[in-house]
Length: 385
Image (cartoon, rainbow, N blue to C red; front, side, top):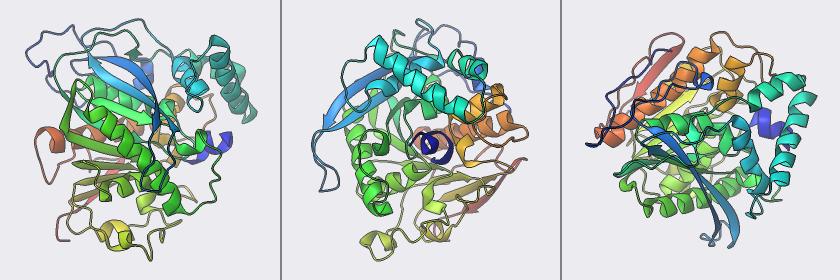
């Protein structure tokens, strides 16, 4: 399971004026080294978790299933500093929802450490990774006001730490960001089930997280977007078509445009469904198992679609592990990639720019800065195309 968990499933600043909503904030914090070229905006970052048991969802998912919701929110000042090991520790109780003990957290960190060292990384490289400072703090004071909501749908076997940099970055730019683990890390469900069955199961969690968060203080329930990585993009699509209240969709090398399993909707009512909200799909074409196929995306004639290719990129780097690998080159999480910091930073910056355009400015044809500057190239499919 851990092999898939880590390796398979799944430049220039976009500076803007701080969104202070009338409140004078402390100067933006210095970005942690892990962020590479990314810069915060006017907010610090608060971290929270909710432990919930979700109700049954339309026969897609059973009642009482565990949903650990990790939340990044805008804050007015930094709290006690955390390191990456604090994110790994969240995996200790994501299935049980029991109160995490220091012993359980230590065991979770040790399990991941053993796997990464078994793939060729040194103990020292893993220790440096775990000791990397992050931007979020448990005790950071929440910023007043209501902010757009972004729900992140994780790739297979992934948890909050896999998209931690994206969550922190968006929160520092005035978004509330929420995610829950892939169902494959909290259940014994085999991954041999059909792609649609698995997508519906995860879509149930996406809809549940969105419903919980839209009723949470500090969230604007009318401005909601979903970001799906790898298999999470299939689940996000199902949730959107099912009626999840999303106004924008970002796919990070998502399965909605993967040659493998490209017939996953054949023979279902969803096969002819039309996406009606703007889509940003950022992808690579180097992996043998995650190869682009835009058959489905080209059928969504009622949506504005931006397809952005990242040259010489690999699937696993569309996560926070891309940022880790760019900083700690001794950590073996994937093939070597030139200018990796520029590429992973650009993916996050374009995601933020797209969300700003749709959720803040109401754009129906969002422009993407840097999208046609090496190593990025884009194809735009307008409504009707």
